Image (cartoon, rainbow, N blue to C red; front, side, top):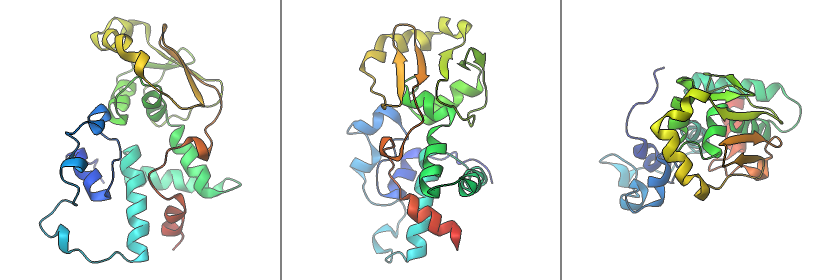
Length: 208
């Protein structure tokens, strides 16, 4: 299955809510969900009520769209979470939050997860002073997230340094805004995750 390359705002409209796929644009009047709250398509207004299975699929797709994963990637994460002890739904959400591209986004080093993924794949980000170009790498408590030394000379880094003060991040992360170095204080908990999807519905979808 190939990666989705269409308009991100179309995914938000299809889901019926903002998935924050366009960064700061989602907070402006230009947001497509604000301007056109109906789902895309000519027959959007005449669609029938979703079945239970349809609702489960919708919640699963919202999670996929949020973290910008292909079905095969998402299914692999679910398989790992299913084998762990405890609540599978919580394990899945915590694993998704621990992805390096998501952590870079949460730290405010990128405006969206897609931009964060690009920074990682282009080799601009380091974990514990080792350059990592794998967006799906899972961080752990105590890990230090920083910029590659040569990347600090880029125009993007200079621009980011000027506006990083306004960035807000979750309690499980901290950022030295002067040196632009982040750290994972602890692993996220379900309460720390602002999930716009139902983890329970995802479990039910894959359990059938």
